[in-house]
Structure formats: C-alpha cells, structure tokens
Length: 114
Length: 237
Image 1 (cartoon, helix red, strand yellow):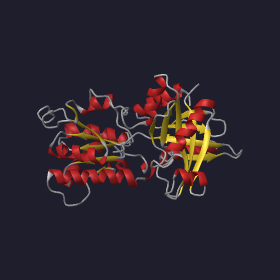
Image 2 (tube, chains in turn red, orange):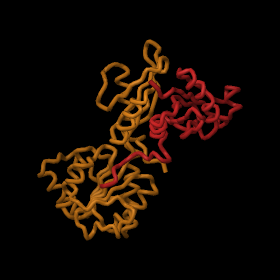
Image 3 (tube, each protein chain N blue to C red):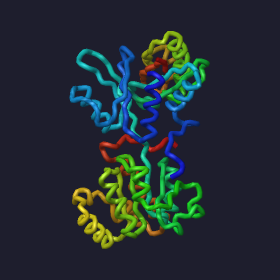
Image 4 (cartoon, each protein chain N blue to C red):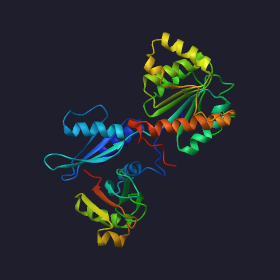
C-alpha cells in the first residue's frame, strides 16, 4: 500500500515522458496515430514524443516511419503549428521511409506549448 | 496541447479515471472529457461509445470538422483477497500476463513478506484497503480466503463497483451459502450471478498452481471478451 500506483515514467509511457521533458524546459512535440488502414503496426492513439534535439520516445509504427516523423516534428516546433502526416504504400515518400507492411497511417504532430 | 492540459491528462491516468483527449484536427484546439461528462449531441454520442469500446477514433461532424478522440482507459489490475497458496502462484502468473496485482489479507501469518517477495501485499482488513484504493470497472476481484468475514465485504464492493471480473473460491455448496448471505445483505440476484464460482475456467485444475492458471485464464477471458471492456488493455509487457 505504501507504493502508490503510478505510471511508469522511466521506460514505457510517452505521455509521462512528454510531461517530464516539458517540465525540464525542453521543447516538446507530440505525435499521435489518429487513423489507420490495413495492417498498421500501432493502433490509433499511440504516441511518439520528440524533443527539440531530436531525441524521441515511444512509437507510431514498428520503427518504419519514426525517422520521418522526428524530422517533421522539428518543423512543427519551429513553426508552432500542428501538422497531419500520412504514410502508406500508395505514397512514394512513405514507401521510401518504409511503411512496407502494407498499411497506411495518419499521424498528427503538435507542439506541447501554450 | 498545452503543458497544463498534459499534466491534467497524466494526473487523471494516474488516478485511474477514464479520460479522453479530444482534438480538433483543423484548428488544433483540444480539451479533456471525462467519462460521464458530455452532451447528447452527435459528438457526445460518439464520445460515449468510444469510452465503452476503448478504441480511439476520428469523429467527423456535419460541418466537415474532424475531431480525434483519444481515449485513455485505466490498465486492468487484479486485487486478490487472501494471501494463500493459490495467491502465491497467481502473483507471478499475473505479472507475466501483464496485470498489476495487489494481495490483501488481514491475517499477518498469511500476509508475510517472506511468502510474497516482490508482491504488493497489504496486511490489513479489505474494507480499509478498498476505501483507500477503490475498486473500479477495470479491476478484477479474486476472493480466495474461504472466510466469509474476510471475503464477503470485498465481493459486495466489487459487484457494486462493476468490476469486470468477480471470482470467489469455494465448492458449489460453499458458494450457495455465500449467495444466501449476500442476498440477505441486499445484493441483487443479477449481481450475484456475476460471481464466477467455482472460480477459474473449468480445466480440471487440482493443485494451487493449476487453480491459479485457471483463474488467470478466466480473468483474461472476462477482459477480452466482454464487449464494453474489450479494449481495456493490460499493461504492455
């Protein structure tokens, strides 16, 4: 009973990590899977959190498109404007960054800021 | 999302409240909605449904506005009443399956740290423990002391809290007497029928370890196959 039930901030939870990073004064962007088609590797609601240095935590795919999301997150942090990204096999760019599992996903990237 | 909203969202998740982060994908405006809040408009109806399914979705309004409803349901956990032989086996099995588990038993001879190394173990009366850490829809309650003084209170509390699984150890005869007692205490028949007894899937389990496996399997079945909670997830291993 002494040990209060808490979310594991150390390894698993991107939202807890986002809060921690933000409290440290780091620039933080939050990427969220908002739509999936076909055999998308991560369900809607999955998060990737990215800081201003390009450090990231969590996942929006099985590691296929995280690199591209991190790059876009840098622009989102720069502009302060959210972006809706789409990755899928029909999309040449997405094919190049590698969501080759046959699925398609939309990822919403927003800054954690006032 | 503002840092303040993120803090509020994380606090709600830590408190095991069912909460939803609603974002207008066009404007970026967002807010939190708690289960039970919300209006009766089209968006409100989808919000309600999404809280039940646990599956995050996009809602498209008639005006073409698109909202992302990201629902956060508390991870499933197990509260065991009784620090008995079966609980000693159930604790590691639950951990492997990805469930948080707490064992409550006021009898300190049973609830000794030596018997339950590394397990969240509370040597107090269940009524007091459950007041501090209430049961909810995302909790499974397993009563295995065989002692009505210890088991009956939490069973009643679990039915009232609509725990997704309520199981009690004991033969059909023992359970018959239990049902009589709880019925006299005012528990409705429909609620009493929700108690899984004899406890565990019927796999012919005989030893404490086997019974623990049968209980774990029954809990997983209750979590994964029951409609409203089908997507409440166990903690990712």
